[in-house]
Image 1 (tube, helix red, strand yellow):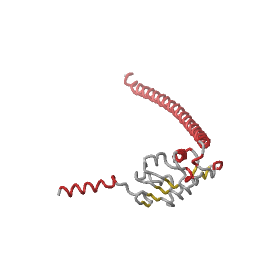
Image 2 (cartoon, rainbow, N blue to C red; image 1 turned 135 degrees about the vertical axis):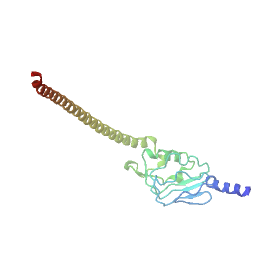
Image 3 (cartoon, one colour; image 1 turned 180 degrees about the vertical axis):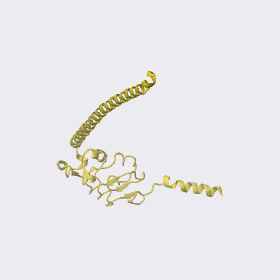
Image 4 (tube, rainbow, N blue to C red; image 1 turned 135 degrees about the horizontal axis):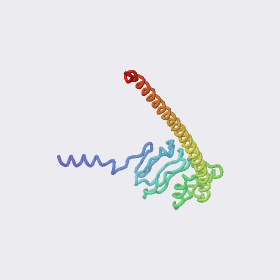
Length: 204
């Protein structure tokens, strides 16, 4: 009975010990084949089994590789990356760095930039850091411009809100002053009415 319970407990831990094949890829012992699966960066598996030696990622819609995706794969020998529309901007820095660490870069000669236009068809492994950073600067400039526009809009809305509050407070003060004036007039009329209503009795 106890041995059966232990066996069932071990079975429950098997999914954690033996990583399953990532969807929608096909897997053999040490090969993960994700060729032509329509993968984008968002749909790319977040991790691969540590024992993987060969990974096929060719002919998908990948524009970059997430930072650190291949770092813990100690047995990895080759990743097939051809046939993807690589965007050689800031996001490509990790893939370029990983490619440059490979002993045989010649097998990655088909891993080329699809954009931007001035880097099109360039081999990613041989791009210089300055070439990639120059594309990042355009991105940062656009982001900075967008941030300034958003800040201007925010300040404008804050100014409109402040003006609205000031106008409302002034109107509220006028209404309060008018209410006090009306209350005082009512008190005066009441006092006059009371005094006039008492005068016949006082004259007696």
